[in-house]
Length: 462
Image 1 (cartoon, rainbow, N blue to C red):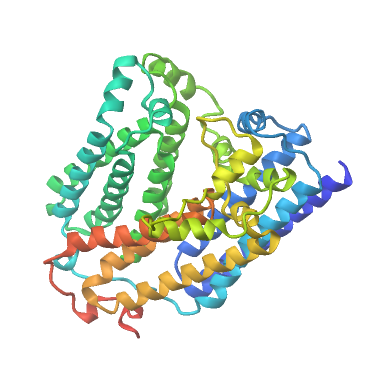
Image 2 (cartoon, helix red, strand yellow; image 1 turned 180 degrees about the horizontal axis):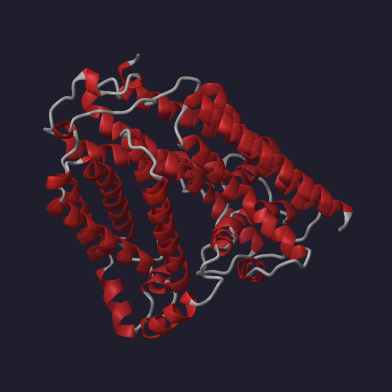
């Protein structure tokens, strides 16, 4: 093992320990498992892929995902540029977690929420919104779905090459549908046993249909975010972790996510045979195979690609793009490219294939190394601002459930959002907080106002 490889391993191990310590410290100071999840998620999308890269370059293992990225984009070498990429990723994650620790010192929703069921959002209204969103999402892709069925082509591949003019509507409906499910399941679990059958049956059917539909589309990350948000909300409502049930749930979640990744590009005619092959393949049941795939590598290698490729800094174009996305109809102003477009052009990414750029890599592309640490500080400020807004909103008792779900969804989406450049702050704020808040607020209209004693002490300002 050469000296540079040892330094890379040491750097990676040092930041691994630092991120773990900061995540645990934030959890103990602020309360809430979301702090552990955020730390783990940021680590996964930023540095976890480095273990795979280093092992492959040492000849200890093979990685189809890394081979595909190198064949399509650029070859990754263990050199000074890669060491710099590790340092920047580590500093980026540490700056986020340290900033959260400094800015968020008050515990929030740390006690059980005993809000009575009649004050919860209407479960029937949530299910109705979920059904309408499902129908609207499928209608937006009706032409693509029909063509994929007629041609015998996987819907996942068809929608990746033929983008519908209604694709934005389709994505919005997907978000709304999953938000309603993430809110409905914790409410359903709190209902008295005798009143669960009808709504519970509808909820199970809608959940399975959404899983099958989004699984065919290959939208694994959307499902994962909704599951995490649902779990966090479940805990916020005073649930206690039952480790046996949690283990069973984790198994089925793994099975669903692993199946989506494995079978989403398989033609329907070959699906049955591929399922039988996968079930007896040890690699299918190995969690490391799922964790070490393209999700942890595609964004990770982007920093190395930008550093090792002669590409000029964009001097803040991501901020301009962000403002233009908020005010898209400014006359006489041309739309600037986003950071991914600049990155893809610089490394020669093939047309028609979508890859990822890490948030930190996009920040580096704008202003260089200092912008990476500054970007981490901005994310910490955004998180602290959203958390403060949620605490303030929760003082109005009828906003407690919309606030809690929106906060949980924001926390679930934050790490996943690292797979896009700095422009993705808009998606984090709108799709991660505002849309969940509004969806649950609509379902809660007319449900009355909970008494102050029914709320967590922290929500009452105690």
